[in-house]
Length: 456
Ligand SMILES: Cc1ncc(COP(=O)(O)O)c(C=O)c1O
Image (cartoon, rainbow, N blue to C red; front, side):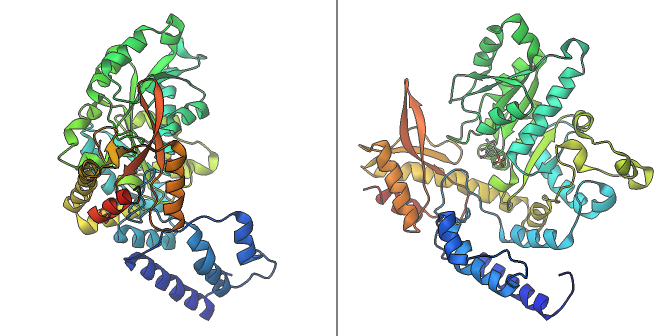
């Protein structure tokens, strides 16, 4: 299994050929899922005592299994938050795997962690966080949000008067589901400001003022969003920072999706106030063109994260010795063993340079504006709200919720596009509408036009 022979050489060639074909293909279909029973019927038993052989297993992958996935980097995949890793980043993901680097401690992963840190310095610089701020790459936004919330809670609980209290955080209805989920994991209560639109400092202050004395005692953090997933809305980060400073609360910004737009000069000002955050989530696997999975958590004072997350164990002591001095990513987030998942981002950034990243993010913003114009020109559809960052919410005039669902499935089935419906609250009612989220700079104006025309 671990020996080098002709089978290994052949398998390596096959994998490289597949990879080259995959990254250089210009015309690709959107795959579609099949039921597990259908896939089983197609591929049969693959895990056997003797093994089915690499050649046959790979054939099954190419012929059936790979086609049951929807590649997130398809230019007409405009649902959820798509992705669009650069070819350089994808190729270096292979190198990351081939290099077998343990990315927890400098002692083992110095070269890889050095590269990650170079990329991280750039991300930190985009935020304007003060000197001393730093971050680490995580498996995604969910893990980053959890790492941030746990750091905040541990810091709060260090004070005697809060020991034994269950913490409370405030965010808005527009916050991503992972904030609510991670509050559950960290066993803290969560209070939602009732808006999916911009959460302002004034609304936050009103909510804080309305707390009972015991709730106020338990409140330790506020989570603002730097680009809501549903509509690309950026909270009033400066206003929220004012309240957090006045009330002595930890300020976390979830910019998992929107954080890439910090690189875009045209919208950077919308994030003003983010530089006053205590922690920030940004996902390079969303709008920084990294392959899955790559999130990041940044801290104003990384030493607080280290206090919260650093793991102790007799077999780990050697990593903390003089001889092993260096940056240990494991100390700043929830995971011990970790892939150096920032490495593909480093290679791509080093290859293409910051300017190309700026251009690619600006293209996503531009595509949202183009979509807004095309929606204005098409009599069948209308904007629900002005495009925000790279999200566009629009309605097909006269459609009921089931029409959107049917249209989504038809497009998906035909391998044409993946555009999914969402809900938007207008007045007291939730309306089903259609949503675009642009990340991929390869999406064309014609793609958008054709998708809108398919709603005729
Ligand atoms: C704003 C926001 N926060 C957090 C997440 C969760 O990130 P992940 O899926 O990488 O865990 C997402 C995912 O879309 C998001 O948009």
